[in-house]
Length: 462
Image (cartoon, rainbow, N blue to C red; front, top):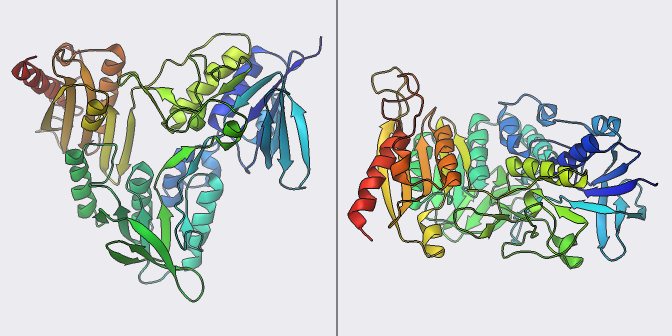
């Protein structure tokens, strides 16, 4: 019998994890695997780009987990610089464009994996394509930014404007600061880190100010002003203009689903492809999708959402590869856990914010505590703030946010497990967490927050 053919669109985390897992389960004589990647690199950490730009990661190749040659050695026909431009679902084939030669051709499939990722939000404003304006979605983007920084030379005053104050925005602000730039962050929202509630975002704002980063909230960018040489000179907003030698866009991303939409595949309210628990595209037996191009179930809110994270993408790929290769796997959903940092300030969240809880009709209470990440008497003890949200009547944990110094952020993992298990805040107070003065006070800050939230639940009644 002829081997089945698996076609994979996208050569990064989800796509190549799926291809690799399928290959582990089925040899080349049973499953032919053809993968298309439009860029220059495969299987790399996009999340690591800010740390490469900052110099914390020495070289671009340190971010690459597996090269095209390594994939090919595993009997995966990986075609680089080749973009899939059309998807013929009834005919079970894809049309590909070789970006180097300009040639196009059709390739048939028995099974298809769509892992097209996400595209950075780039507003259609004057000057957004000017030299010196950079996104940071791919390794190519990171290299272009570094080349642009090198071209500026060693000026006495170098000014960077970061547009957006989410995870990428604050991480790139740190990278520019470490590169010796004067950094201004322009944020449309009330406070930086809109994934936090505004009261916790305020802590991030204050800390960024303390680091020498100027954060301007409520500033909507209206365009990029260029100089006589065509390069960026200023960023214009509805509240004034800010001088810039380089601009970094950290506004966020959207699912890259244009190809799937044109083929009639189902997308959700956030623009991502809809899949079942096996990561199979809804209504299509032989098509799977994973990574930043899909929507996933929020286990706390009970709705789908779009979350662009490499952790999820790799898990999706493992599930897809298992199912394509004849095994079995499911992806049940997420609770929305994320961590970040700006210099020595750590930021973490999981579950719902207050406005998320209101949006799904949940009545809730909150509690916020201040503690330290180590015993107060131990050298290096630094402040940390924990905010906890619980359902008003039942006390079920709904969300946790943490802002603090070294050793604070990863405590959010305790809350992520509690959310996944459906625990109440009262149950959390009895958790047997590790304790020693270098790591925690005798009452861990997460447990202190849980105790205070229990009191809020009891005080709120039904």
